[in-house]
Image 1 (tube, each protein chain N blue to C red):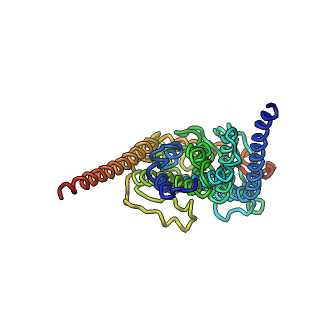
Image 2: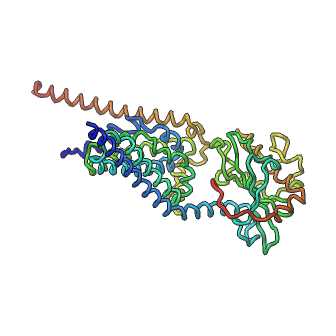
Image 3: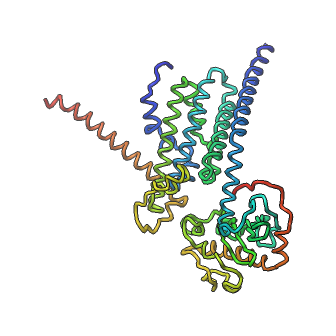
Length: 230
Length: 219
């Protein structure tokens, strides 16, 4: 595949084929950890790293991996990457690690990762696989962050609460209290909030897509009409 | 034909083996690079938790390596209780009970309770819990200072009958919308105090030989 369309990969990962909003993969971590922005960001970064390392690795070795053993090899590479990331987080982001807890090892089972390996990395050159993984990862992380921010805002009236867990003590000033003396809306932080929030995000994305399509259609009609009018 | 088949089986198997081997090498090197830092993190985090419930500067021993284990049932805990012993120049100062209660709203609540030798509370912290965020989690110090209301209390202050949440006729506040969680914590702290009032039991904590050094998980 000499002619890889990087722009298409980018738009696929971030929007058109977004893993969180269109492919709807990895919903378990997506809903479970996003009760605030920082948790979403933390899991997002861990997922990006796993995707990038495993996809690039798989792409490098793609000619060696025969069809029969490809799935075990994929799983092996993904599991090794995740475990390494888990150990590193445990060592350097101790408190965040304790919050994200079980969801880091569970990245192994996140279908996005083996999905990209099977659908893209194994058929494409390492640079393309790297880019695809990065874009898919960022696309997923953005959904995590958006959902996390949304739920945090409704539940506590803050954004970036507990930022120090990720960026160190100096970052505790990053927390934004948008609404003073907010009474809190518990539902948003609880599991139903995740479902409602994700539903809203999906609706917003579809609405934007529909509007865009509508506009494109009207433009087409207009440009079809204008020569006749002229 | 047979040779062909053999080749079809052996080559991929070998390849798979090589991948597994590389995986093992990578993981074990990452593990050996991080294990020291991880152990250190666990220690620091545990020490920080323990130090929070002891009066600052009241002890000078190495807390992490001075502890003994108790049977949890006697303290109403569903797990064995570790007791860390704070001493000043060898003299007992405070016993720190890492206890737990199964009576939380969603399962076990793990508590760290400091009891001075005069049987008063030097501090209580919740180390681990699964209570409802926003309702039951007000026992976390960063959410509210409710847990500080235990400081300086003892079985005489309030009287034993006051060791309940206000809703049950006691002295301790409950949270709006959540009574079970504070009730469980008040009860667990009371159990520790009741156990400690047996002078012999309490003194024996400080005499028991220390268990071999180790790092407790899930600090």
